Structures are given as C-alpha cells and as structure tokens.
Image (cartoon, rainbow, N blue to C red; front, side):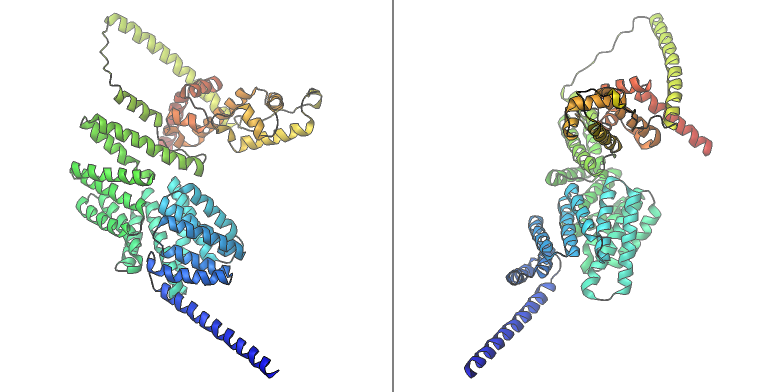
Length: 571
C-alpha cells in the first residue's frame, strides 16, 4: 500500500514538473520570437516549435495566434497565404468569432497588400465583417472598416473612403491616448499612421491640397527617425514628394520620391513604389529631361508586367509613353505601349466590374484597338478633289437645312423624353395585370406565373439585364422554368416579346443614368453600350433612337447644354 502511494506521488510530481518546464519553455520561446521585427524570419524556428506543442495539446486558440505570428514574421507572400489558411482552419475549430474574423481579415490583407487582388480581398473582408458582428473587438471592426475603405478608394469613391479612414483614425488615436501597453501600442500606431496616409491620398484626389499637406506634416513629424514605422515614413515622404511636384519644385520632389522608394522597397509594397516611379518620371518630364522621364515611365510598365496590377491613376503613364513615341515616329514602341494600355484597361475594368457593378471608368478599349489597327496597317489617304464651288454651295445649303430640321426634332424629342423621366414614366419595374381567364390551358399555373413575375422584378431591380449575351434560354434556366413559359409571361405582363423587353430595360436604364448622373455624360458611346449590356455601338445607338426618338450623342449634347445653362443661371 505504501509502495503504491509512493509511486502515485512520484508520478504526479514528475507530471507537475514536466508541465511546469513546458510552460517555462513555452514562455521562453515566446520571448525569443517576440523580440524580432516584422518580416524577420529568425523568429520562425521558435514559432514552429511552439506550433508543434500547441498541435499536440490541440490548443486551437493558441495555434491560431501562432500561425498569425508566423505570417507576421514571414517575408514570402506565398508562405504568408499558407499560414493564413492554417490560421483560418484553427480559428474555425476554436469556434471563436473574433479569431475567425481576424483570420479572414489577415488573408484578405495579404491578397490586398502583396498581390493587389481586390476580388478575393473584398470577399475575405466581407467574411471577416460577418464574423466580427456581435463581438466586442472594436480594434478588429475598425481594421476591417479601414480595408473596406481602401477598396472604395481604389474604385474612386474617395469621399466614402475618406469617411472610413477618418473613423479608423479617430479610434486609433483614442487608443494611443488611453493605453500604454507596448505590445498593443505598435498595432494602434500603425493603424493611426496608415489611416493618416490614406486620408492624405483621398484629400489629394479630391484636390483638397491644403488639408492633405497639413495631415502629411503630422505624419512626417511623428514617424521621422522611428525605426518601427519606416514604411509609414516612406508613405509620407511619397505624399510630400507629390505635393512638391504639384508646386513645381521638381528637383526637391525627385529626391523625396527616391528616398521614399528606398524605404518602401523593403516592405514589398510595390503599388506605392510604382506611384513614386511615375511621379519621378513626371518630374523629369516637367524639367525637360525626356530620356530620364521615359526611363521611369518604362519602370512603371516593368512593374505592371511583373505584378499584373496597376493603380488607376497611373493610366496616364501609358498615354505619356504613347505620345512620346508617336512624336519620335517610333511606330513599334508606340504600338507596344498601345497594347500595354489595352491590357491595363482590361485589368482595371475587370476589378471594377466585380467590385462595383454600376461604376465604369472611361477606358476606351475599342478606340485603342482601332488606333492600333491604323498604326499596323499604315494607309495613306489621298486628298479628294473638289469639283466645283457651285456643287459645294448646294451641298452646304442642303446640309444646313437638314441640320436645322434635325436640331428642331432633337429639341422636341428631348423635351418629351425629359418629361417622361421627370414623371417617372421611365421606371424599370412596370407590368400589366394578367387575368386568370387569359392564361392558356397548356400554359403555366397561377403559382408559376407569380413566381416568375417576382423573379422578373428582382431581375429588374438588381439591373441583371445589363449582363452581356443574355438570352431567354439563359434567363429561363436561371428562373428554373422553361423558355416557352417565360416568353408567354413576359408577353402578357410586359406587353412585349423578350428581345424588346430586354432592349427597353437597357435603354431606359442608361437614359436615366445619362439624365441623373453627369459622370455618364463624359463616357464614350461604346462604354455606355457596355454598361447596359449591349455589345455593339451601332446596335446601341439604333435601339436608343428607336425607343427614345433621338440618338444618344444628341441626347448627351442636349443634356450637357442644359446643365451648363443651369450652372450659369445659378452662378
């Protein structure tokens, strides 16, 4: 009995001793890796050892934190994604919403910062936001809001994005003022400085240069000689360089932008580094140092080739290159940068199509393709010989009369169309009552009719009719019905066949946009056609005239004229 008691006591002592040693080792290893800075891979071995221990004990909460730490210290974007996936898996097993939310957010940040893949980043941000709802983690919520603001900024919603950054900035500033714990202060400071940087960018895009400069002075003052925030200091140097460029201080701007690039190079933030290259090129261009300017513009193209990403505001880079080589009569180089600009537009448009269904920038791909074709097939057109001043005079009189009659018709038709829009006669969701006795015996039952009517309303309300290549068969498949039923119900409820119904939806939609949103008035006809789901410029123009009684170019000119008159009257 005594021997058994002694053995049990001895085993308990050994177990207690081993657990105590394990806790001490765990604490020691954490102390080892926590002394390193971000992207310092010397921390990884200690973290991997702790990961093995956490896995053995199935401590998924601790495991989640360790995978996040591995992501923090890793330098490889590919490896970061692997750690991010492991973080998500562990967080889900832990069943803690804050951990799950943060895990999704971190993976989204990797896609955003290191790959500039906005589509997966946005999906992950929204997933993170979903799990953050209901938690008490305000830091997490403001961090998600910050990155959603970054997506809005990319789309050009600068005012909306600015609200996100201002809200995040106030939160981080408050936390800095109220806390002194070093372990969390670094995160708050980074959030504070990064939100200031983003606010500066938004103010600059909104042409509020005074506020931008004022904020930049705060950022520069607080990050100068701060080894933990060298990247953030690089951002502020970038903005100072851009500000000096705008003021015409090109030599000073060049030095600041080059210094910024040196700081950003280590952070792998190629997007902002590319902005530096572009503005350095613009400084040299403004200083009439054309060879150096072109060299830096070509570096921007090299970055685009490497990463297949470019910030929309750098589109001008290619226009400058095309103009330069056109002036130099270097057709092959001009052709190359025309092709590159087409690729740039496709990359940007691809993001914009997914991220904001109703936002399209005026990147005229067809025009670029036509210019490319004209450069490839260089054709010389001769001058037409004019056969008599009398013939010209007659033609001019005929043209004048036609123009006069056309303008009169345009004015009348525009007034009629304007009244329809004002009186809401151009609303999309309109339908007729379908009498039960009118339904064919072999047709759909009342429940099917009501279901399809509901789906048609959703189809109209969500502007799904702007999808390219939409046919009645595709729509019937989406509605889980057959095309015969769908065609019959559209005829009865909408008073038109499918093609006419679809065409009217598209034209009414784009007409309302042209009338109510002056941004659309600057778009090319091809862009307007694409925006409402019509592939051909000709088909779009013809359908617009058939439905509205005037061509889209005439409507645009008349609307621009009215807005100008209103502005002069109010001004």
